[in-house]
Amino acid sequence: MSGLESRTTIHRAGDIWTVVKVDGRAVLKSYKSAAMVVNDDGTILSIGNFDDLSQKHPSASLIDHGSSTLVPGFVDAHLHCPQLDVIGSGGYHLLDWLEQYVFPAEGKFAALDVAVRGAKRLSRELVRHGVTTAAVFSSVHAHAAEALFQNFERTGLRLVTGKTSMDIGAPKNVTESVEADIEAQEKLIATWHGRHDRLFYAITPRFALSCSRPMMKALQELKERHPTCYVQTHISENVHEVKDVLAEWKEFDDYLSVYEEHGLIGNKTLLAHGIYLTDSELARLSRSKTSIVHCPTSNTFLGSGLFNMERSTAMGVNVCLASDIGAGTGLSPWQTMLECYKVQALQGHLVTADELLYRGTLAGAEALGLDNRLGSLEVGKQADFVVLHTEHNELLSERLRVAKDPAERLFACVTMGDDRMVHAVYVAGRQISQGQHRH
Ligand code: GUN
Ligand code: ZN
Image 1 (cartoon, rainbow, N blue to C red):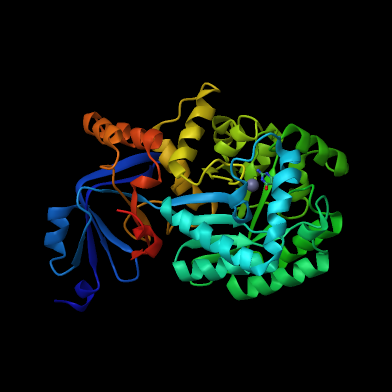
Image 2 (image 1 turned 90 degrees about the vertical axis):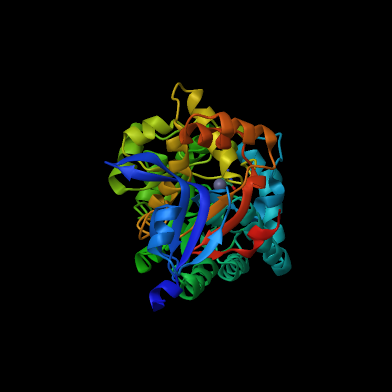
């Protein structure tokens, strides 16, 4: 037995589904009687037919997933940890909803034990839903971002997060002065950004209505000092929000300019929503390689509007998906992909199953600039994957049995799938323990 072989694992499954890029287009690639060979550092060595690969790697240790299907770990590119208990709070559109539900909920994270428990609950929920990489808003409190980093370091998930910057437009217990904010962020960046190549810091202005001019300027300078940090924020989600931003930031012609003129857009920036962006704004996002994070269950729940994905992508903007809980209605990537399908269908554009999976996996990795390592199951990438079972759901199982091809099967999962399908979750070839909670 060679030393190399002894450190190799072969995962056997009924099927493997992944999206790959062919000539710049995302297409579904599927393998039957499948196997994926993973080395000790979590890199995928080969994917294909089990009989072929087991012959080529006779001494690899076998993990047999039976008839299950392996898919890439999902990327949830925008959600709010302190809003787990805000999910399903109806009755208001965005700005009133923030005041009525969100700021009080985020205020509770001033208590360290609440923040620690929130981080723990979030990672457990993400694993339960098959999400292996998440870009998360914390609260304004530095210890809440710290708690997320500590928890995700332990559990093994991939995390992009930051302390939410807000010094105006909200109650005192969820705002902080510019000086205290920047000092806390410097510490968090020094401790966590790039740790294990798995935990990354995001400068996180809540949105243009939460940050004063001195705060935006300070965030600009912070980004200049730490250009490899991500930036995440909200943009053009709601008509009243856009109107208020333009009234507040009179010196700028449009919403994007507020971020753009502060050096906060670019290939490490994730902008949530973007429903009401103009052609000029989209063209500038495309040029600067800034991604839009589409949050369909949030947009329909809050009645924010219908994001036109075809228009944005036709202009060359990368669009990925996110749950945006607590405005979003759940953490399930299946639910998010299905709502994305419906939102686009209502606007006359019928998204394929291939594209839905792409938006929920590889496009998220592209938004984070991590697509060379994550987002799809391909040789040379990290083995971040979800083991799916369907037998608990008779209706879905039968639907999958009669489906004519993998794309039809995938669409059935998008429509009928939920967290009960998630049997196990792996990041970089290692099983994440909360994934074993069922079955
Ligand atoms: N805009 C500013 N803050 C928020 C938030 O917490 N949720 C959503 N959906 N939009 C926002
Ligand atoms: Zn949000």
